[in-house]
Image (cartoon, rainbow, N blue to C red):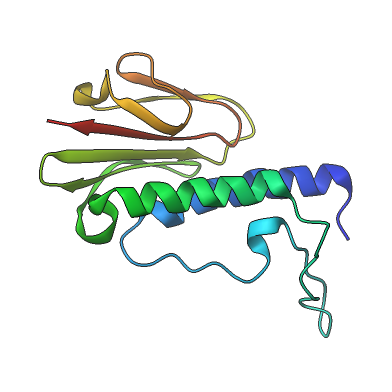
Length: 151
C-alpha cells in the first residue's frame, strides 16, 4: 500500500483529474472505490473489496460535490466546450449553455501558479475550489477552481 505521503499526493492528483474529467463533455466514469481512496496493487490484486468502515470521507464528499455541480448545471450535459488555456501542467476551459458559462481550471504543478482568466469571470461565483482575484486565478499546488457566471 502507499505511504501516507504517497497517498496524500495521489489524492491531490486524483482531485485535479476528477475536476477536469467532470467538466469535460461526456459522462464521467468513476472506477469502483476511487471515490473513497481505495488502493490497487499489482495483478492479481488489482482491486480488493470495498473498504467498508475505512473510507476516505473527505474524498467521498469531494466527489459528491462534483456530482452535485454537474447535476445542477445544464452546461455540463449539453453545453459548448471552449478551450481557454492549456500547457503541460495547467488546463482551463469553459462550458457554456445559454446565458450560463462555467470556467474550470486545474493545475497539476507542485507549486502555486497564477492564470489569467477571461474578464467576464472577474466577479464570478465560485462553485468549488479556489476563488479568483479579478481576472487572475492563483491555484495552490494541485489546485482547482470552478467558477460560474450567468448573464
